[in-house]
Length: 127
Image (cartoon, rainbow, N blue to C red; front, side, top):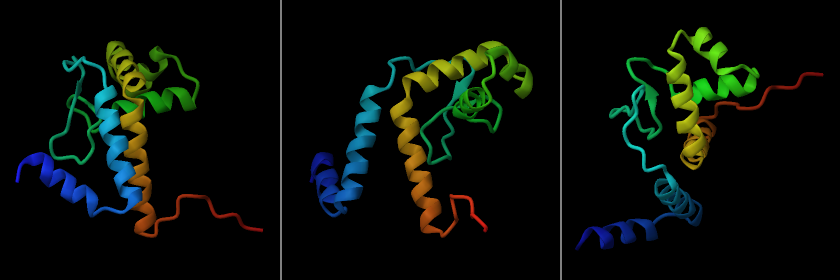
């Protein structure tokens, strides 16, 4: 049995929801930028995540970008806040803007994993 047949057999055994996750992930791989060399970013081989981290730090490029967006910060403010080179912030922004499908897919996977473990994701409203 060749690789294509093995993948197809495994895919057929998945629920329709999981099949769609696989298709979405494949689409995200195809839409990724052709840039593979990053000066400040690297993949973590031991992580299930495919998104990139800042080299030498336990900090995802997405975390810099999300922090910047959520707090309406400039690139310079983020660099100062996280004590990273300004170009590392700019590279993280470029990466996140060109890999949004992957980032969304990984966020969905993480959310489902937390829900399966019974971890509440919404704040409790008390009256």
